[in-house]
Amino acid sequence: MTEPAVEAARSLGLTVTDPLVLYTAFSTVVHLRPSPVVARVPMNLPDGMKDPEPAVRRQQRELDVATWLAAEGVPVVQPTPLVPLRPVEQDGLWMTFWTYVEVDRTAEPDYFAAIARVPELHAQLAGYPGELTWMTPLRLIGPGLEAAEAVPCLLEQEDVERARAEWKVLEPVLSTRAGFEAVFPSATVQPIHGDAPSWNLINTVDGPLWADFEDVTLGPIEWDLAGFGPDLYRAYDEAARTLGLPTLDPKIQQVMDLARALQVLVCTPLVPQIPELADGIRLFATQWRAMPFAGGLS
Image (cartoon, rainbow, N blue to C red):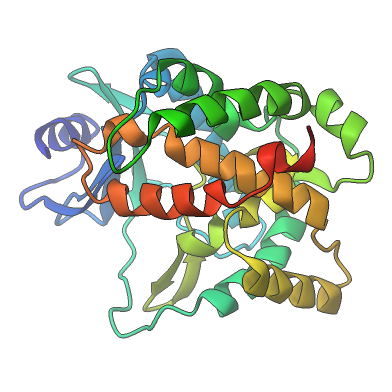
């Protein structure tokens, strides 16, 4: 779906003659050729993210954080300077506009190298002066689990029941900073990327750039590593020690891994729109079933 992005771009004075869809999943990403601009249009979202008001606030936070990071010299995909720094509505869809970057198609993924860069990103984000809300990526878990239904071969009824029981234990700990710090008083809490930053490090022809700060939030550093496993946790810690930065707390990481799994499980209703989600949900579900109930907090 390129028409709303094209219409919005043209209304802002951009020239668009040959739009190209670069990516589609939770959002559709469109290169508005020949303009050096990319539109990101959230499309396939969980029910709890479809209310325009919080969605627009989320988009504005991302624009603000990315702009601040760029001004601080952090290598990020930047909002385009060719349109105002704000979300734009077209045909009931809200979208943001970004500077087009050329991906290096020859680069091989190196997740260990990407993980080793995350402590530096955390150090840079720690100085962000803007206001961020507490752990926004988790706000969909409760409503999502209330509405969850079994899906054979993906999410069984016993899975739904266990997930609901676990969230009853976890919600008082994770829903507020005060509740979290009451259990984990020594946690490193700060502005974080919010959505697996090592997976959102784009290899461009001009070098790696951080991207997709849609879930930027205030929370423990462990959330940005949730679900990656012991080898990658060690890679983070080694890089953090080299820089003299805080390392991961294993107990907090265990809880964040569980919360991440629950966040993934509540995306099950989106599989008909995004079939490729199914494999990821199965993987997280398998890992989650082997975890201690409620991350050992019960």
